[in-house]
Image (cartoon, rainbow, N blue to C red; front, side, top):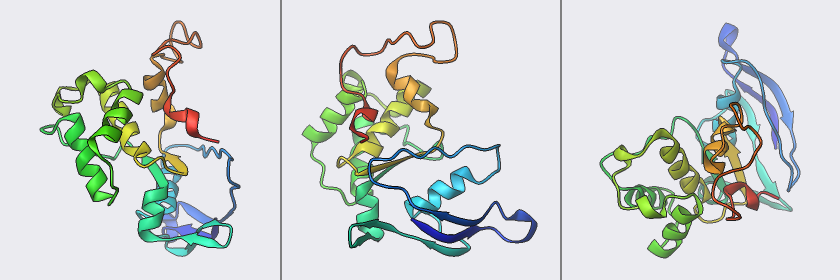
Length: 188
């Protein structure tokens, strides 16, 4: 939930007066032209940036998610998330689990990598990954700890996980990894 949320000042203001409540289990899509503030909004909702004015609150029942709890309960994917090319996929995931103070063992991380189709490449350096594989690794990062909510900046990356280019020939024909669970399956 946000109240009176604004970002930027003067002619550079990209967001102004946003009042928003999203119910559990809902899907909210934010669209707009480049530079409209979509990524800024998501960074503020994730707690990575502070709005110029107003507040951003995540509330469940009577309890508010603040600081570390918000980071544990939200998964976030952004094109800005930089991976360490010299680390393996598994090492990147371990690193980000520590940064987020999330107790994730190698078994859980291995399951996440399998879930996004990187289990056979877990020990390869991320620098050797294709751009689609790097997107899959970002999904694994976002899904650490089975988050209650997902914030997806540039959500078209999900198509890389499904193995289908939804804009080209064969769009909408399925593909990917059979009946295996996909990251979006947990969104309620």
